Image 1 (cartoon, rainbow, N blue to C red):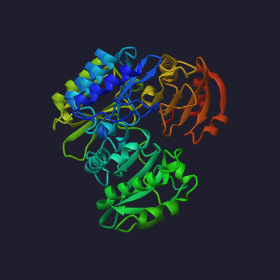
Image 2: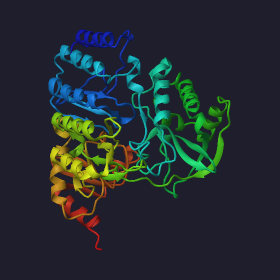
Image 3: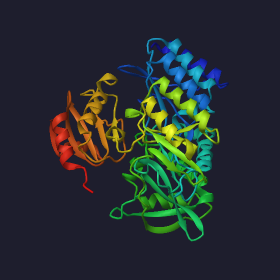
Image 4: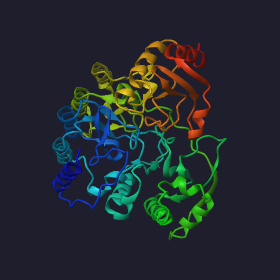
Length: 470
C-alpha cells in the first residue's frame, strides 16, 4: 500500500474514534488494530481483547469483519487476543473501513496511541476459579487504564507485557513477561510476589529471590516499575524489554532502585515458589466457585475459528450464560463459556462439538500449537497447520496427552510458553525435535532428533509418551 493510502486510513480511523491522529505510527512486525501487517495470505489485523473478554455483540461483529474484509480466518492468540487474516493489503480503503467497523464495535483502545501497549494478562478463569487466591479482574482493569491514559507508557514495545496472577489453577505463568506479580496468602493478607523478565517459578529446583507488595499497592508498584524502565532505557535505544536491563543490572540492584521510588516498603520473602498450575487451559465442563455454575472450555482446532463458528459461540453465550457476559478467550488459544447450569453442560458440549470445537482434553489435537506455516508466512519451511492435522491423526490412540509446538522457522512465533515437545520445520513435512521450552536462540543447535518425517516423529512420540496402563 502507498504511504498516502496508509495515512488516509489511519486518519479516518482516528476521526472515527473521536481522537487526533498522532504524529506517527511506530514500525513493528507486530500486528495491531491500526497497523495491519502483510503476510503471505494478506494482511493481519490484531484485535486486543482486554482481560480476554469478548461480549456477544462484539463476537458477531468480529465474525462479520472476518467475512467482509478478510479471508474468513479468525485466530485466538497466545495472549488471549484475536487476529483477522487475509485483509486486502492492496486496498487501503478496505483497511480503513475495517478499522472503522471494529472501532464502532468498541474493539479499539480508548486512546489511539495506546493500542500497542494493552498487554496485561490474567487467568481466563479469574473470578471463577475455586482455587484462586484473589480475583485480578479489577486490578487488570486499573492497570489497563493506567497504560492507556499515561502518554509516556505508549512508547513501550508492542511486545512489552505484564502478568497479574491470582494464584489459581488455570494460569499461563510460563509465558515470559516483562513484569509479573503473583498472589499468595501470607497469614491474613494477600501479597503479590514481584519479578521481572520471566515468569513466576513453580519448580522448587528453580527458586528465585523475590520481594512482594501488598495487594493495595500493585498498581502504584507497576507505575513505578514502568517509570524506572523508561528512565533506564531513555539513553539506550536497544533496550526494549526488561530482560535487556537485567543483562547488565542485577535483580537486587533493580529492586533497590525501584524501592527508592515507592512510599511503601517491599516485603522480603526470600525464595518463593508458586504452586504448579494446570498445564493446559480448561477443556470440557469444570465447576466454578459460584454454587451451581459451571464453565465449559473448548478448543478451536489449532486456534482458528471460522465466522460461522464464532457466530455459533455467540449464539450459545447469549442463550445459556447466567450472567450475560459473553465468553472468554484463553492464552491456550481456546474459548471459555462461563456461568452455565449443570443441567445444560452436556447439551452445550454437544453443540460446541457440532461447531467443530474440541471439548475432550484427551484429544491429541487439543495439545498442539502450530504457526501459520507456508500458507501464511514466507519464512516457514513447511505447512505446519496441515502437518499438525496429519501428525495428530497419526498419533491418535498411540500416545497419552502431551503438548506439541510446531514451528515453521526458528522465530517460534506461535508459542513462547512451555511445551513437552517442539518441532522445528527444516523442509516440507520434516522436522527437528526438541524437548521442553527453548530458552535461547542457541538452543536450536541442540535437537534430540533431526530431519524426521511425520511418520518417524509419530514412532518417536509413541515411545516417548506411551499410553499408560491402568
